[in-house]
Image (cartoon, rainbow, N blue to C red; front, side, top):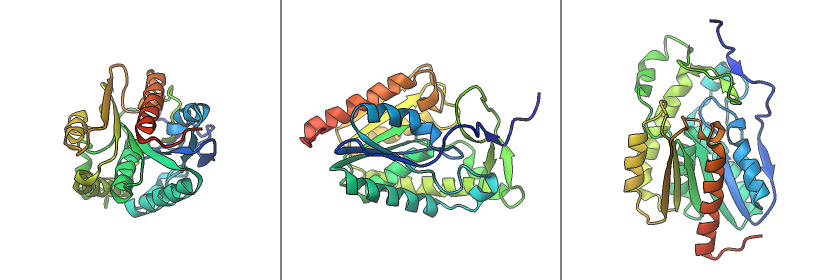
Length: 256
């Protein structure tokens, strides 16, 4: 079996985007080692539903693993904060969401910005089994190859795990875990039953502890970790649109 390329599907457009299309905005963050290709399909669907949508490419992503090892969780958070500020300048209400590490960034912002209208969490990487080991391995190796790669999926990003960057992901997880009890925004949680990357049980237990009543969870039985590109992505898209409209209906904020 041939070794897969370090960077998968370079022909796809994984750059940052902002599409102004209405008074309600949706800010989406991609996951660890990925690019905006991961959330672009959902973004296109929501734009078609009349929402403004943005997705920034996070530092260290979309180039090479060495760049990613130079990134920090603070640089990811700073990019997320800047994107949120730009979105709030253009929209009257903003939902924030993301896949995997993108979900962590959404939760981080929600604790700091109670004006966020709601959270959209897809396979949030609240706990990644074995990630703690990178604390001890990173000084000796720059990266390791991922155990499973699927080149048939239109996913763009690194087929390796940059280990110093993985430590930064671990640190972000610990910070978000401490802050999550203060998150009081409406939450949509979507998990894949076949996810072998994160702990679904931890995500579900965290969901139960969130201190609000406007919560909605779904487990897609035929999906893995990358829900927004998997076989049930259309279902995830539809659930997202319905959730946003339900929350906006309750808040009375204007829809275009």
